[in-house]
Length: 155
Image (cartoon, rainbow, N blue to C red):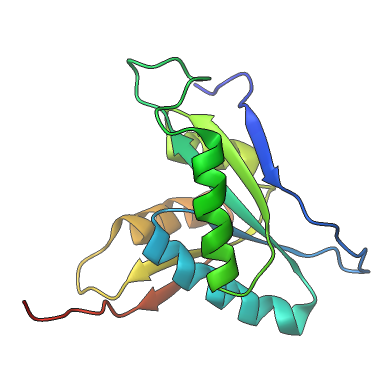
C-alpha cells in the first residue's frame, strides 16, 4: 500500500557541475548527530568519486496535524540543516519530504540501487539507523553505515 505522491520541499539545491558519472550519494537524515557523521563520511566518499551529495529528510508529521502543516516550520528546519551541512563542510542538495512513514517515503523517493549513507552511534545492539539500513539493503539499495562514538561527559 503506497502513497500516490509525496510532497517534496527542495530547501537547498546548489548549482551542480555536470559530471560524466552523475553519481549521487544520498544521506538520509535520522537525527542531527547521526546525520553529521553521515555527511562527513559522504564527503570523504564524494571527494574521490566526484559525486554529488543529496540530504534526504523524511519529515514525519503526526496524525493529528494536516500533512502539509508540520509542527516545525520549514524555515526553522532549513536553518538547522544548513548549519549541519556547514559543520560537515559539504554543500548538499537538501530535500525534505513531509510524510507519515519514513521507510515508505524512502522507498518511493530513492532511485533504484541508490548509494545511501546513514550515521549511527557505536552500540553493541542494533540502532534505529542500522535497522533502517537493513531494510533498505533488502530493497536493493547500497547502504553504508557511518558509526561514531558518543562524547559522554561525567556529571
